[in-house]
Image 1: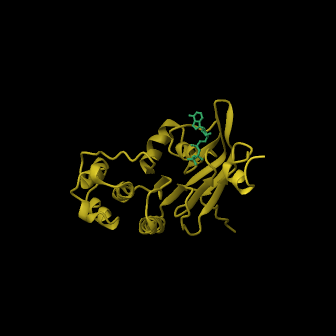
Image 2: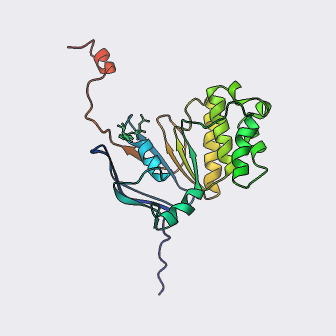
Image 3: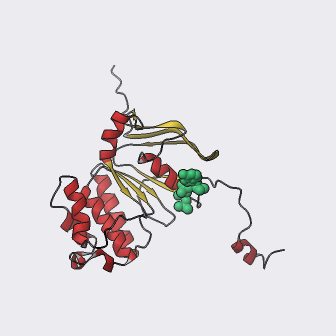
Length: 229
Ligand SMILES: Nc1ncnc2c1ncn2[C@@H]1O[C@H](COP(=O)(O)OP(=O)(O)OP(=O)(O)O)[C@@H](O)[C@H]1O
């Protein structure tokens, strides 16, 4: 009888912990993701969502534990060189050049990838077709977010790391975001999202990071109780 070994997870976080300034930010995080998988990170402000995403992007290293890609530790330089080519990073800093047009802002990234032909359909899908030739400085916050999402599609890398991707998006924009995540996963892509806002990502793992500090009475609590004692 031959027993087939289960496939290695594409991404594995094994007992990942993080210390910053002698403070524990993340403790023993364990997550396993296969192709087509999704992970939603939630938690209060300061609970470590962005910290975890930044470690997944290789911007910083875990203080303990490992992040494995195809079974290899991403902090090893030879591995990281290949791993970083898999990543598509979206953060609140949008890296949009004000003087460039919407099209140039997307196409530039596509050209750097040595790819072509995806920018225009991506911009149109994001509802920015009419603004294609406008300078980015004309854009609203939500439109800028849509440019970032068009970039994700144009660059077309397998692992998406999305920090608060729906901030500034209207309902239609959020539905579009959910749609492109679903389509990306259908192709085997992996999506990891840190968010405070509700987002519909089916069959995703949800990791709620614990608050880092004991909860003190907030202004809202005081108002509920009719004022401070
Ligand atoms: N380089 C650093 N040095 C020291 N502390 C840091 C560093 N980076 C982050 N922190 C601290 O780590 C904690 C987690 O920050 P992080 O940005 O990951 O939280 P978050 O869950 O993304 O929060 P938010 O919901 O507010 O975006 C915070 O208390 C922050 O001050």
